Image (cartoon, rainbow, N blue to C red):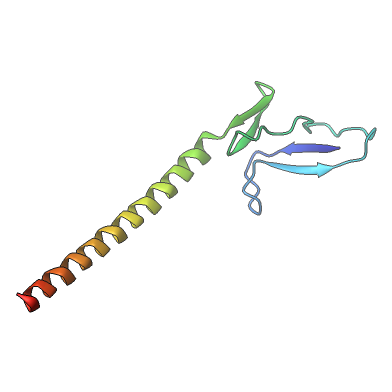
Amino acid sequence: MKIYQPLEVKNTETGLWYNEWEISEGMPVPEGMVLVAPPENLLFPRWDNVQGMWIEDKDSIIEKMKQDNDELKNQLLETQTAIADVYEMISKGDEING
């Protein structure tokens, strides 16, 4: 049976807000552990003790969106550079042939 240990700080090795443990059926569940698995639809599940449920960690979402945005900016710059290079090659070809 799997149980989940909610963390106050992200696990630096896994990047998760919890540790997952396997225990034998019938074994007592240690205090503070959660029996409910994090929903698969959450990218960064974090246990909320007040609500008693898994929620999405908003800070992690924002961090990921910033990283994704930076990657998209780099891809856009590479694409624009490639287009400019192609345009320059075509222009030089026209000058040579013209």
